[in-house]
Image 1: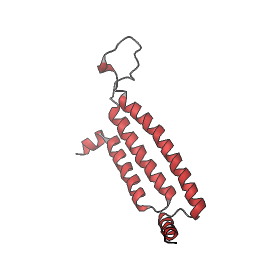
Image 2: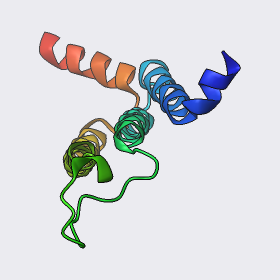
Image 3: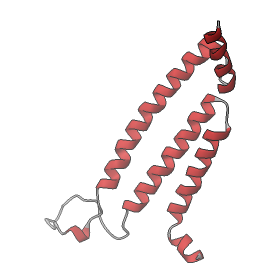
Length: 125
């Protein structure tokens, strides 16, 4: 069992990171800390995808010597997915931070429970 863990240490690390991010997302009340937790989860997914797409001893899928044998190269799809995911996650993070700034300017707090109470009071009035 220990040898399987050491062989797949990147998958184990990505699961631990995902758990840390998910726990942070659930436990924290501060919106900035929730955004950080979501970014940790994103990073864990990217690490997992990149580690599963890498095959030791193979080359990047760029033909130099004219050898087009598929057994010589890694699969480029996981790398492409990771790059696309990073671009999307940066955009989502920017949007979340912009919304957090707007919420802070309106309610003067980043505590999600306090904001929820203020919004409920606004709707009752």
